[in-house]
Image 1 (tube, rainbow, N blue to C red):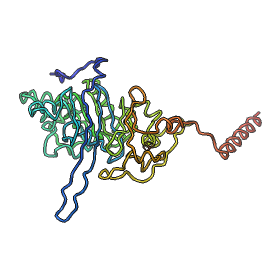
Image 2 (image 1 turned 90 degrees about the horizontal axis):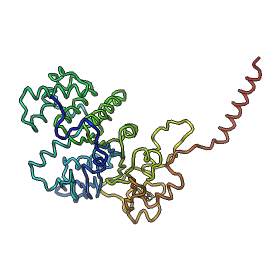
Image 3 (image 1 turned 180 degrees about the vertical axis):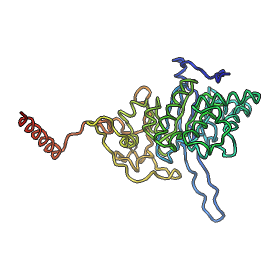
Image 4 (image 1 turned 135 degrees about the horizontal axis):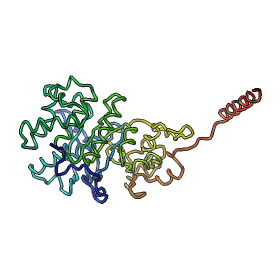
Amino acid sequence: MSLSGPHIMNTGVAESALEKPILESIAVSKHFHSEAGLFQRKKPPVQAVNEVSLAVRRGETLALVGESGSGKSTLGRVLLNLLKPTAGDVIYEGRNLGNLPADKLRQVRRDLQIIFQDPFASLNPRMSVESIIGEPIWLHRDDSRSARQDKVAELLRTVGLAPEHGSRFPHEFSGGQRQRIGIARALASEPRLILGDEPVSALDVSVQAQVVNLLEDLKHQFGLTLLIVAHGLAVIRHMSDRVAVMYLGEIVELAPVNALFETPFHPYTQALMAAVPVSHPDLRRPRPLLGGDMPSPSKPPSGCRFHTRCPHAKPLCREVKPVFETVEPGRQVACHYWREIANAGAGSLIVPTPSAAYSQRLNLFKSHQALSLESQP
Ligand code: SF4
């Protein structure tokens, strides 16, 4: 028995195919309306996602990052057709998911799977591991019971568990093992794309690396495309090929991972990157001061949505919404003043000029060293 299906590849993905989007959102919005009570005024809708256009390339790992409330999880769920968009289109393999009949949508559901954040809440405690992993196989294929059991055993081995674990229940496993079960369940329908919604943030740090490495191995083994929603920047840097930064329901910067971490252009990306530790002791990153909290998505600010917190905001930012423009091949940013900000070196890694007190201490240390060397026989 093999997990290789018609769309699961054990070899690399052709170069040209990598460039074609497997999944795309075109001006997608998702607004949540709340019902007003009898004597209450109607509340404005929560604009969780606002006119986002994004293409996920086949075979890549694309990360969606941003603070809580930035809309990254909602966008991921809209892309997977788990939430219907309020406006705009989601295109999977050239087909508009909004126009697909129910039987074709069922096939799409098989191709697009999700790994949830909380491995404790996402598994039914009353179901055995075999039933949990076998359910998608039962739903999407006509396999016999023994073939299903064989497939579950193979999936358990694939994610680093033993076939005997199939008869146990979720509470008998650790957090990392439960997430492996969640990954096996996602793989059971032989998907093409997996959305990892904060896949490791609920796990111990010691287990996070194991699950990240497992996801990477599986991506290469089965030719998967990964869409990772996360706020842990270390995980994103390790795993992703490209990163889309979201703020208040909109993408403000999209770039290859190394370019983004080396020279973030958007002031919001710069603020996020300032929290990432730098590995070289002589390098520093300036820390822009972000004022206040994220505004309510029910009443987003006019113009640039980031202007209430941006240290570089000018009057134009309050009036005019910046265009999400291509600033380099493969790189887009939504900021009126990104060029000036980049030219001023904001956000880039710098070698800091030592302060007068630091230089004094350094000279004292050097002269002390020289004295002790001279006094040696
Ligand atoms: Fe800041 Fe203005 Fe750029 Fe928005 S457009 S990020 S407010 S400088």
